[in-house]
Structures are given as C-alpha cells and as structure tokens.
Amino acid sequence: MSAPPPLRIRGLSVGYPSDHGPIQAVREVDLDVAAGEFLGIVGESGSGKTQLLLSILGLSAPRAELCGSIRYREQELIKLEVAALNQVRGNRISMVFQDPMTALNPYLRVGRQITEVLQVHRNVSIREAERRAIEMLESVRIPDAARRLRQYPHELSGGMRQRVMIAMALIAEPEILLADEPSTALDVTVQAQILSLFQELRARTGTAIVLVTHDLGVIAEVADRVAVMYAGRIMEQAPVHELFAHPRHPYTEALQQSIPRIDAPRSTRLASIGGTPPNPAALPAGCAFAPRCIYRLPICDSVAPPLLEIRPEHWKACHHEGELGKLRGEAA
Image (cartoon, rainbow, N blue to C red):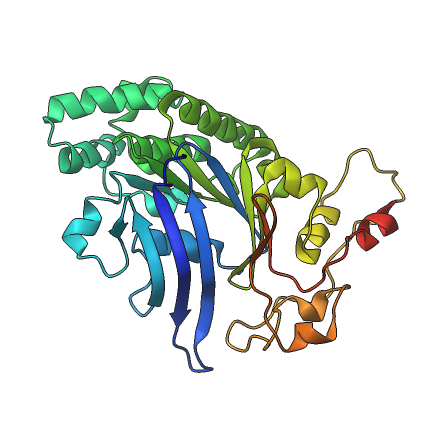
C-alpha cells in the first residue's frame, strides 16, 4: 500500500470581491503532491496557477475568500493560525517566487535573508547559520559564496538572485518546494541551469517540486506529472509522457499545437488558440473553454464537466468522449 501524499488539496476555490462581481481565481481544484515527485502546472496567464500556490502557503491577498481543504500531513492549512502556519511555510513547504528582485528585501544583505530562515525554524547560532548558508549557496553553484553573503540583492545578476531564492527556500530542507515560473525573466542559458539545478536538488534531497509555468517544453523536460489549468480549473491531469502522447482535453491539444517546432518546414504557420480566455467575473455557465473549443457540444454551454479519471492516473474535465486529433491532423 502506497504512503499517502504529504499535500492534499480538495475542492479548493479562491475568490475575490470586485466592483463587477466576485472573481473566481481558482475553482474546485483537487490535487495531490506525492513525496519526491516533480509536478508541473501549466496554463495561459490568468489561469489561476499562481493563486493556487499562494493559497497553499496562506499568502493570498487579505480580501481573498478561500473554501475547500488544503492538508499537509493531516494538518488543515486553510484558516490555520498565523503562528502555526509559520511553522509550515519556509520550513516544511517553501516557495521560489517569479521575480527575485521583488521577493528579496533590497535593504538587507543576502546573508541576513538566508540565515534568518534557519534562526527562525532551526534555532541555530548565527555562526552556524552562516556556515550552512555558505554551503547552500555553493550547492546552488554560486561562486565565492562567503563574499556573496555580504552583498545586497542589487549587486547580483538575475540568475544569481534566483539561485539565492532557491537557497533560501531549501536551506531548512523542506518536504515540498513550490516554484512560480522561477526562470521566466532569465535568458535561455540561465533558465536551463536553473531547471538542471532543480533536478539535481530533488535527486539529492528528495524534495517534491511543484513547478508553475506556461512553457510546455519545460514541463516535458523535467516533470513526472502534469496538471493543465484553465480559468481556475484543472482541465486535465496525467503522467507527463501520457499527457504529451495522448492528450485527452481539447485545451491540452491546442496548447501542444501552439508550441513552435524547430523541425517544421519554414512555411508552416504557428497554430494559435482562437478567441480569448473568459472574464473571471463573468464565467460561462458550462465549460469555460467551450467558446474556443473546436469539439464543442451543446451540453458544453450549460453543464460544467466534472474532472473524471478516464484511464489509470489520467483525468480530464470534458464532455467530448471521442479521440482528439483535428488539430494534429491540420498540423500534419
């Protein structure tokens, strides 16, 4: 019998009040994060990926309204007292934010920001914390680590700042690492280095990684399992090789077809997804993707499809039961 996953999310919804009505950023999400796995979460901008990660650590905006359940090791995190929540975040669950320049405190030296994590969660001396901070910076391949501790964030390159964020997130040896598009603002070479670093750290520490991105190419390279989000919902979820070989949701198929291919003829037109994502304050009554879907059925306009397991470990939320392939046929 397999061990229960350390993180279990059930029926999670995150909403915000607005002048145009409530905005549903995350809608009825069910998701597990298994020990040591690399889970990718993909989708267009505004699909709810970042809001999902922030809700796990209780970092949603003050006006956010959360319902459902987020359980870490049988401890319910939603509405947990701040003192108890602080024992989880940064300690058992850590996060690497998208922009390290805004996530790091510009007024504090790098060393102070890293060692503070250990002093809060491990109650170690300043000397011991600095020693371990140097070791962690070296493990994320920052040269001259002792000197870097005395520098401010603006004195480091973008790639180094992101490595500092990763060192901060991992220094307390968390069980789960949440990464919100950690390499989006970096050049391709540094992006590859950051992804390689994640893989090395997971292999060495056994930390489970949840990576949010809009780049399916990145997910194909590093993830074990993928969840595809659209308009706040998970539309499809499967092992990475299964999802790329046999996408079962029209949105997943459309995302795959929109990826440029270097082996395609020069005359090949890049596929795009017609239409625009729905207004989160005025979502359709049925499937949110229906207005853009080439497999649209009458029921799609009025009934939101549930997320159902169609094959072992492969889930989809779609009324279309036949095989996909229209877009792949057009691309061929």
